[in-house]
Length: 347
Image 1: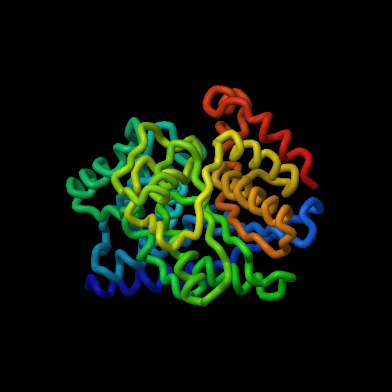
Image 2 (image 1 turned 45 degrees about the vertical axis):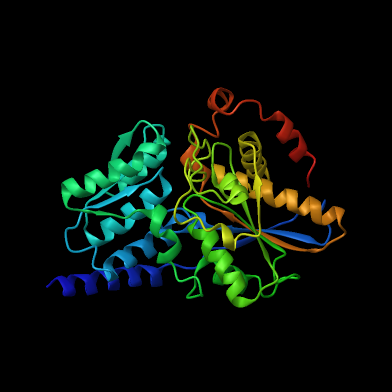
């Protein structure tokens, strides 16, 4: 009977995938960068609203096929929000209980969305406590701890099969510069950057993967120092990316270079993007696009032409009480005007 339920669960996930269209690739028209095209892969259009929809689908299939998830298995995840929302979506699809372990400071809108899909939230004081709390809950409830930070890099088929890298290169095929000069990605688990980097090498593309990292994250230091023991005292203020420890799914060897992005630059960029796109985006998208714009400036200075692709990870509607609240920004991020002024001149 368990095999019958697992077969049914996999078919449900596959059917959900067939009902979902691919996400859009948006080209930004920036006259200040002649011969250089900047694209945003809009992952906010997934049914659960973010890039993490892909990861959640992969993690559920991985758990089902490994025999870790069975009928009525409680699903527990350590997440600051978006992964938890997407996993709650799939847990409801399969009729499984879901608990998200997250810092108490997580954006209220994300908490509401987890609860909308039938999940519940278990809060801890800071992000460093989410791992142990998740493991404890899984033991107490005889559940399955999804552990995105360990399994993200291996749950996705990086060779193709319509993964995000395969999708990007297919959508770029008729563009003026179909093979991007750069792919720019921020890291939360490191799973998406691992998929992108492996796919680039597997396909033999002449594309560099640049990973951008916010403040209070150790990924940049880990990449520079090759020391997996590095830790940070504080949590990232850009939700969904940056970690206080080097996560197992972060694979430095597939990355060509990394760039540190000030949090104020990330927030200034998401406000600039609202004017350019006519809609709100999340903080990690601000980090991604700031990094992409710095690369575009370098290309322009070097007389290069080509394309840069980065990700629009989720909608800004989830952050109305944080990144789109002037008082919150002043208290938690500080003055963003220096970066806003740099962006204002772009067209």
